[in-house]
Length: 380
Ligand code: GDD
Ligand code: MN
Image (cartoon, rainbow, N blue to C red):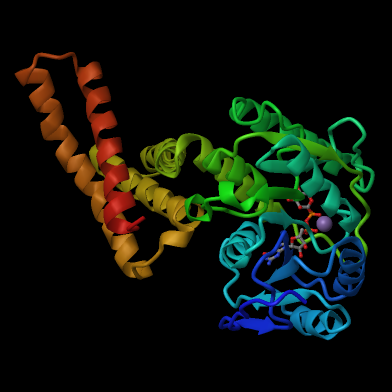
């Protein structure tokens, strides 16, 4: 073994063997309940890579004892292998990878899945391609010529994969000119071109995050065939699909602007209960239409609160539920009181037409309500 400084074991980390200081490659493997895949993965990685100069960093969010299995099997190989177990699982797969990047010390950082859908034998090819072509980033691609989606189970998954690839290729055209498989979970990056502090991953698509925010220099691809899962099941869910859209929207338009768009859509959806309640009260009761309009407005505000609170601000609920609700209600009703004097000012003061004036007050109130909600109620 090369002589070198050894490294203290981090909190939450199970140290298996200290790594030598000079490393050619760090392999980062995110794991979430992959107990039955880890032994074969380690065997194949150890077989494919030089034992000196390699470290394998597992970043784990499992509840099935995966770390213990890793530790037990790591003892068979003279390779530096560490497991960093997280209790909170922040950021999901992408968060785990970024945490691994902060720990990794190799000249090259390779990211791959634990379920052997990414053949471990390709790792040396990724790094060789990077060195040969002077690239900062090497993407393992299913869509480059010579690659294939072989293991993608059914037509539905194939369609989702093609569709989401097309979406991001369109939204990030300039970043992805030389990338045929931006959704790939297999890639190698030269660590000198990596700035993990800039990454804000959300879910699965860490490669896209990295390309857009770190803007690596030259990007090349190595084709590979996506394999069937070795054991267990995919951890991707429908919620992961929503997370993906949020991630892509935030990456493209900025998280603040994306929230503003969602806030607007939720606001527009409030027209539905507003009109419905107004109609109900007018047809079924004898209340005056102005009183009915006030009630309809309250119902719409409650509707907006329910949607905003669960869909938009789920991760920003630092205030208690009563506090959030009462502030939201106050905001929604104060809006009505403030908009009428503003309308009067615009119409009689600036002699604007009523319709134009009303539209302006609605727009102004929308921006003000968004800012109040975003900054004062949910503290984003
Ligand atoms: N630490 C951690 N935390 N690991 C996770 C988490 C998490 O929350 N969620 C998933 N993983 C790990 C899994 O244990 C596995 O090693 C890897 O991330 C990929 O998860 P899968 O559930 O197997 O994903 P997939 O097969 O549906 O999708 C993969 O392949 C696609 C095609 O290349 C991913 O790599 C996608 O990003 C990729 O687009
Ligand atoms: Mn998989």
